[in-house]
Amino acid sequence: MDTSEDILQQASPGLIPGSDAARAAKVTRLSPSFISWLQAGPMMLVFLAFFLIPLVFVVIVSFWDYNEYQLLPAFSGRGYTDTFEGCIAQLPDLCTIGKTYLMTLKLCFLVWAITLFLGFWVAYFLAFHVKSKTWQMGLSLLCTIPFWTSNVIRMIAWIPLLGRNGLVNSGLVKTGLINQPLEWLLFSEFSVVLALVHLFTFFMVVPIFNSMVRIDKSLIEAAYDAGATGFQTLVNVIIPLAKPGIVIGSIFVITIVMGDFITIGVMGGQQIAAAGKIIETRVNALQFPAAAANAVILLAITFLIITMMSRIVDIRKEL
Amino acid sequence: MTEGRPRSFYALAIFFAAYVLFLYGPMIAIYVLSFQGPQGGLTFPMNGVSTFWLQKLFQGTGIVDLGAAFRRSLLLGLIVMAVTVVLSVAAGMAFRRKFKAQSILFYSAIASLIVPSIITSLGISLEFRIIDDLIKAHWNENFETSMGLLTSGLGAHLTWTLPFGLLIMFAIFNRFDPRLEEAARDLGATPWQAFRHVVLPIILPSVIGIGLFGFTLSWDELARSSQAIGSVNTLPLDLQGLTTTVTNPDIYALGTVISAVSFAVITLALGTIHMLNKRQAAKGSDAGKGLV
Image 1 (spheres, each protein chain N blue to C red):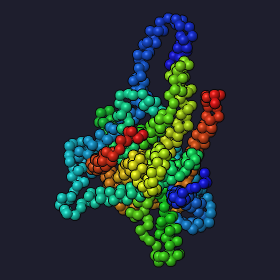
Image 2: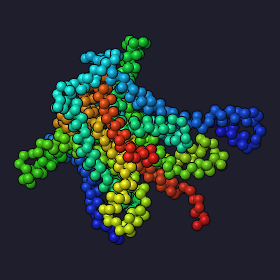
Image 3: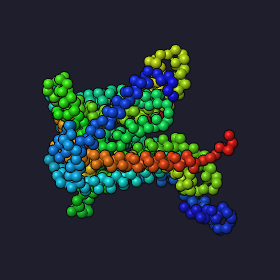
Image 4: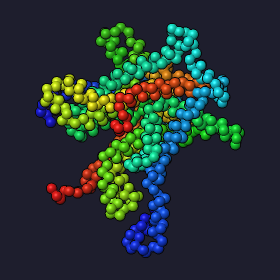
């Protein structure tokens, strides 16, 4: 940036001979599209090197062969056949991978339904009932701060509450509601769903809140004036207008739960099989092609879900 | 404000309060439990109050070398924060004009956000393994690995923080008045001067927000680190490892320390944002004030 020369040139044109030509050259060299490339290029490179190319490697390696300790770069479908082992032989019973995906989808559905319910009403309260901007900001921040803290800590935080001698169990035993501590409170499907809801409702609240604050309040008054009950306004005005946020939030929550292996591992006591968990197990066994094949399957299913959902709404328009 | 709140307000206010309790209650429980007495266990009731477990943590006795993991996580977090801020602001500026490959970058960012972390992590680890094999085969037989905290680890974290940075930049420029910049240019500012003296001061509070996301997301990152960090562990990885083995309040003490860093960073960032907003309100434009 030769700013001093620019300033000189402006102050007394013609002082620097030949600088007009130089300026012209500079202008052609730094065309707007070139500047855009300079600005956006570094981020693009990071995604290329650490996201797009790795995805290509996942697909390639899923078709490689392997033995106990290394990758063999030769075409093989073993990653996939190992994954679907017994799926036809065991019919009509579900094979391991089938059961695993059924479990993953079940967790997905439960977490989705609960986070949607919680997220919708939290966002509704913030968007329509909190009138002052300062309060709105403060309360939104209150919902966001946990997102900036560690997920693992927020998982283990349930242990003193749900454990065999935890607060819930000792409370229930003391009040005489149960004689023995409940075993299913921790390291179970229940605790997995609870922790996932606890961690990821945030991803539902934010997009739904975003959609809701954009709703013109006069539309709601118009519905009220036209004689709609509160429930009718909710179903016919607010929910349709909040739909983009609901869809985006759902995409976030579903993709997170589909690929999760940490929450399911820690809160499930490493006992529950899920789609993300298989990949981790295969990697730990150094069976990379099998891990990659599972990753491809998971990616395909996730992609399918997103495509179905984004049919409902144009994501790009909403951001 | 107080007149005529509908009954649904009170119902939802209670609902919201319950949600906040649900969010914070368990976290507060472990912060309290990390001050257990020396005989205390993993659950309530408290068996005396002491800083025994926190001290034990800092002495480094017992569990893995946490000091080293702490420094590694801090270093990585700071680098991720700096890179995220610079690349997001730059790319955000680019998006104010149309340019080729705009939608490729946009969809890469969105995809990077929603493709399950374990897949990205596995991909990066495969990429680096293959690079290692190539180096070993063609150049240097004794080569160990190119995987590490500041190569594959840094890249893995950036795939998680950059999408947030970019989306925040979109939000900023959605409500940015381009006339301010035009005015600067009309007054003879170069593009850099217009950015440095007009655009940056206005967007600075949100840019600090990007830094906050960059640091905290990296500081607590786990899923993407799991396969891509190489031979060393970050603090969250160590913490996760402890969940299966530890039977005393060590783990709560560690959780409290990690959270303390998060809260310190959050407070610092929010405080700075608040101060900047106040300064903008006080010293900002007085345009139009003389007219009305």
